Length: 134
Image (tube, helix red, strand yellow):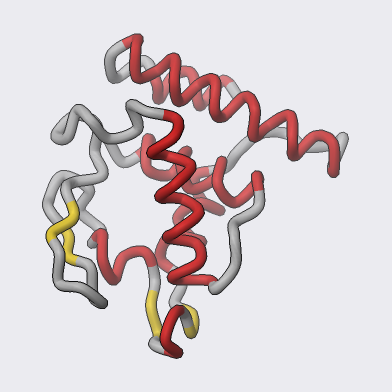
């Protein structure tokens, strides 16, 4: 969890509070299933974010397919063609600023790529990865 706090230090306290609270709640969920849990991991998050799967509509997809690997640039939804604002909170101040929005998009994006909702561990790892690239 120390890594999380160090990463969160890089952007405003209001955003850090939302992300920290959410990561803490995800951590509590994970600990209920695994009492040996040692914290979220950016390498696991990177693997989740970059791995390709047969996703929605049977198309091979990863998170990178729409968001790109450069979180400071716009992405594009491969299904709709809509522009996706950068994932980096430094470039896109609205990113990771609202709990409801974070939950909504994590749920939707996991369903698009993995055809299922992500676990608390996966969500925490992905958020940790996104913050590590900021």
